[in-house]
Image 1: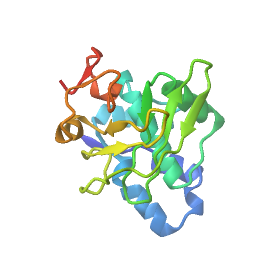
Image 2: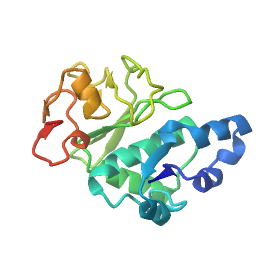
Image 3: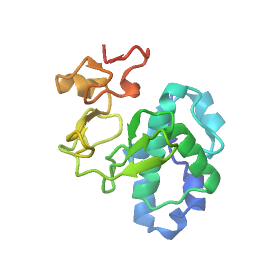
Length: 193
């Protein structure tokens, strides 16, 4: 097991980190939102690649992975290349709904990426999360959010099955608030079963 920077340090430096303070670069390098436990071969294969040149081999994890990259880059004001943006949009277009996670050491931002039938990928900035995680809000922590967006009033979001269980929502079914494909590993429409 190794710890990967979701947004590689080299990639960040090339895309704006050289313009942020040394203190913010240190926060970026140690931000739990930007750290992910991975196996060694996957970490070596990724190296300092961005989404345009490398994505996780586990296709079921790509939506969550790209969402984390977007969150980190947005928080630290890092830019993306056109090829990287295209790759991110392509991945997110396969997601029913993927929230950019909050947490880490910098101010939180929540964006809901949705795919629309006309091919237009849009991002909505919802209201503040309802309750921050008490464990420092790392991306692997349990916790839920209410996006406060959309015409149906808001939808719950669970970062993982532990968070859904803690909220008393597990199992969560497709079409119910809080359901996400990242919770439904076998793809049967029932998450956290």
